[in-house]
Length: 475
Ligand SMILES: Cc1ncc(COP(=O)(O)O)c(C=O)c1O
Image 1 (cartoon, rainbow, N blue to C red):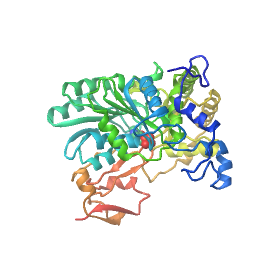
Image 2 (image 1 turned 90 degrees about the vertical axis):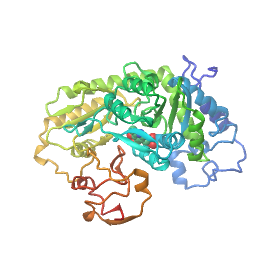
Image 3 (image 1 turned 90 degrees about the horizontal axis):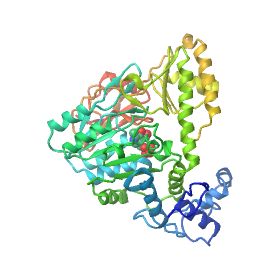
Image 4 (image 1 turned 120 degrees about the vertical axis):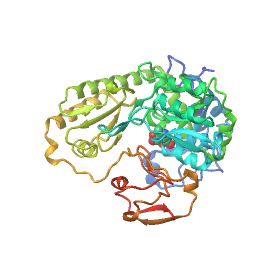
């Protein structure tokens, strides 16, 4: 299978979609099919020039030019999915367009039913909640530990999963997020052993951990720790294009992959972008290549370098794995004395031209990516040293708005029932005491502030400063 050589002569890395797309590009046909921009001629020339003629020529969808189909997977797309399954250590891998969001929706739709109980961590991504609203499964919430000093959620405790499983003998699955957006890692092995003991499948939203299987210095992927399904946002840190993700079914899972595939077929676009699919194929191939291995190694070294520089600073601190849980070294969460995370973010952006991954009330998140150079980190460290030495406290930024929801929900009505109840839109000032009718979540990280059926309290208001009105359930 690994006969063709892409841009990595040593390891003979094979990327079937990339190769098929190149062949189609090199052998153009007269095109009387979608996409109607016909190799970019039917669009604004400024746009075509901006992204390049070649990119427009390559923007095609499945079924044409022997490129295969996504659902069901055929041709180069099928082969690429099989290669990805092998690379990630899965029995089956599905390529996802519309990100891990669609993976989570398909899991909920394909594997849960109305009224079934699902154990979920409350700080999950909103796509899981949307999935549960669609399927009508009933979430049994786990509230991970809160690290208020850092404004962060901690890991999911195996004991909490076990307690809920002991209290409820009709749980249909356990669905956890690992790692958190900021890289906090849970003990998935212990959780999976508990799930196996109770004969309940374990699903892991590993959206932020797609690199783990490619370097032993990173945490172990849940696919190797007993999870049944793992979802990866390759576009986040794996090097593929935005919106492209993967869903993996573990080797020894009893889950019926066809149930997931059927749900994906219902949810996916019928015009998948070959560019996005090729980028998934390319990112898997790159991560397996010598070059990709070096890039990942460099990302880890760069992260360690930055961390060692931060250790020298007096007023800037970093989240480390000595807080009682493991972390992913490439996700660097920092905070500065006297500055909110948002203020630190704006100093980096305005004064130094640095864009960070995200900022919250307490701190901000920096990613050490496979595409970053050492010089990027040298510049970042230099700027952080300048901030550390400069007394910014005199312009301490008073934030009215809060960003990372850390509240304990007061649930008054079932999620789906509330979502489909009669609702009204009222001024935010009148919202306290009413039940939310909508999912309120700020992205990133897409963790919910309020869910349908939850009581709105004064503590929610600092998270709602951008809202003039809010949808609530009719009394
Ligand atoms: C934990 C988690 N799961 C799922 C998603 C959705 O991923 P995507 O943007 O690939 O749809 C996100 C996005 O931020 C996330 O943080």
